[in-house]
Picture 1 (tube, rainbow, N blue to C red):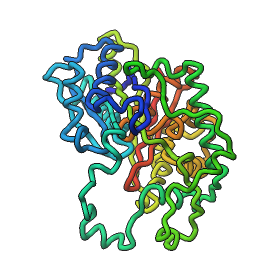
Picture 2 (picture 1 turned 120 degrees about the vertical axis):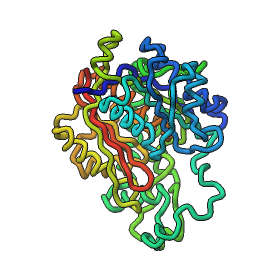
Picture 3 (picture 1 turned 60 degrees about the horizontal axis):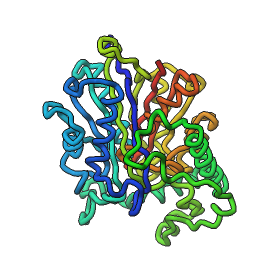
Length: 389
């Protein structure tokens, strides 16, 4: 039976997603092309052997529109014969790209495929793809949800209220994310996964020296009087300090079968053991990580106790804390090198970035199984179990 293995996983440093962020001057085509070039250079695979490249992007408009992955493939110097496509499952887009790649390899549709992702949020701001749209929902959707859905920040507040997560807990979690990321950078734990872009060698968003007192002084990021009347349970505790950073970056993974890897003299890093996708209440929007985790563990025939490391995207601290509270996961094994609150969240690139970090962290720590899950707009989540080889 065919399997799907990761033989290379690389990412760029992450830059602040605004001018003058460290990667602001890099066109998103060139940013994705950098990771695509590195994934073949590091593995030694002839790019002519690649059957497809699947890229994740969220704001598919402007410089990131019109199948940006194809332009990045050509910019990376791959032969013109190598095809490419772009997928959008919101924040989980490049994790979905990994799933599609693995599924294609296991099915026999591919032998070698690259899963990648990019987002240049400093050049293509979040929400750009809906600019000028007065009604993105249509009639039937609006009839189903007559009270209307809410922005993600309000969903994060609703989650904090529903699971009783205090401002202090969220701020403590966020400070820990920065501390872990700073330690990982200092100790060289990102060196194997990061490919510098010019002079940019490390993640730009990591902050040291903040305190709970400093965090407590930050104002609520999403306060809205109309929402406060609609949802009186909200405590308005989500701030810029306990939410993910707007970021630029890209990542890429080379996926093939164990048999093909052996033929090419490649050493697999990990096996894509099991994958799942789940939906949940679109009002709360960010809670599907809970059923997605349960679904992928059931599919894998594993329990939480079998998982050595978790990567749960830190879109908001409340999301990860509610997930841990509901699943019973040990937070000491979650995002051990920091998460998006410290490193940043380059939307379309984050799925591949988290999996790149998880793959290398399993090797650094000698773990066997890793589980990754990400909340996604619309009440969706992907979940993946990988096994270190």
